[in-house]
Image (cartoon, rainbow, N blue to C red; front, top):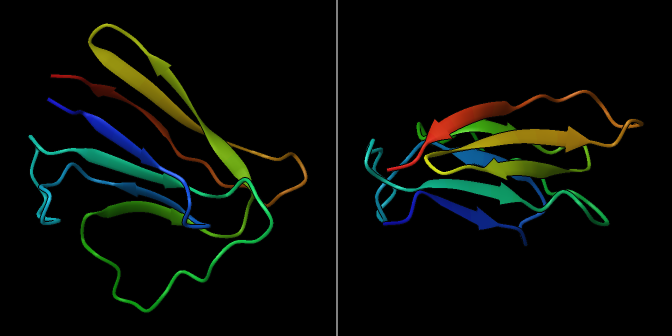
Length: 96
């Protein structure tokens, strides 16, 4: 019954497509965000190719994810520091 999972320790920003626990893209799966960009440093992105399920990634800007939870959906929006490089990621996702 989970729609979204938020993670924070990894010093990077990732937004994943809905997927199974095995990392297989599935429209009925869980969407995961990794938002560890509020601290001291960011990590390298790693080797390419990146996983197909990875929809958004950045490691150049510090910031947070702003989420608005509603009855049948949630909105998300990346909010970076005004002094950081521009990065945008936002959307609305229906809940089951």
